[in-house]
Length: 477
Image 1 (cartoon, one colour):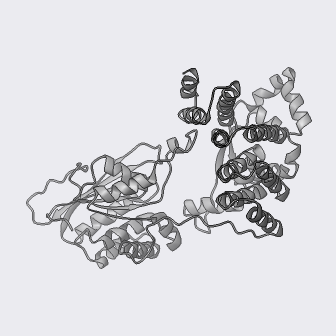
Image 2 (image 1 turned 30 degrees about the vertical axis):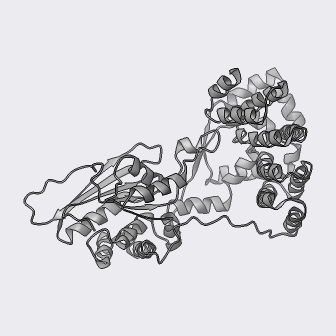
Image 3 (image 1 turned 135 degrees about the vertical axis):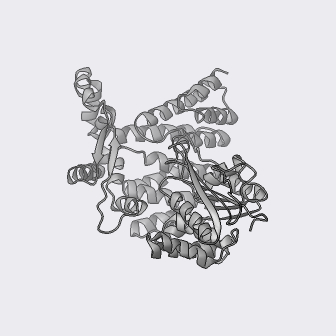
């Protein structure tokens, strides 16, 4: 509880998380308990679905004509409530969090566009934010509130409100918080469930503040169990986790035989544990490259529709329409065709000139409509003939060339060459840019004079920007 009469609270939230509702609850809480309260909001940019700062200031009634501020002032905020870990980090950077501040925040992440579109792993360090939250604030209460909201069938704003009550940062009893929710009149029962879970977690009686560790892959078919037994028998322990995940991914992507080819390729690399651990991860990623068949398959899965309905909180009697933006180029279409046909079309100047105009613009595809659902389902079913497609033949040749280069290099260089697969991801122009950067590094290595450290330096330069400017400068130097 603050050691002064005036109470200042900043709520940092993303669009769609109910930050406005949470701010209204706090204002009602103050007004119903003898305070003059005021709430304002400052909307932010839309790169993170609209980050907004809600500011609440309250002072006991009876103070002559109080003048309340409209925005939080650095160094003068008693309580900061953040609906996502990066928002907590932004509050710290803006100076809202000091040794007088109670910081309450969810530890889950909603990744920014810049993080998701980075050439490599562009995620900001969650560990650094968590460490700063504990060091900079008077007290930090953090746990995965999004997971708690999903478990209780509520929304994150109610969990945040419960955590605020459980923290004891405000001079009001639990019943007063619950009454504010009831007065709001919206989804009262669900919000009270979320509130109770957040309250318990803030007092150390509920959710674990630490992220759950990755669960081991458990095979459910005879083929899967056979491959898992092979992994346990043939691969060193450090590589087994990634190999199991790789097998699961490739069985889902193609079939058990394709997953068996993956293990054959790992076996061909020798017994170096460090090399096999890296290769187990990166080989699986390359072998499950994203083609039009894979994209269509992921778009029409029942689990995806269920996830979207859950994200938008749709009720059983509500209809959700899902529209995608797709832009397949002529190259992607031809690569999905039987290899001979696709190769002839791409090699023919006349056919390419006639067909390219049909694929110059993107399309808005409503995957929840019968027409597009059936079309994408048919394309996803093309998986059984994927081995005959042009793209499959091209990628298998690239993978074998990469593995041959790894096999014929010394251990340190081989590991760095395996890690260069990080450059190759996505599809369309994104894939072509990454593949081009990979080839530039490999060509320089083949030309001679490049050791493991040099490969690592060039790879990091390639990951610095999507246009390859930093890589070009590193190659020139």
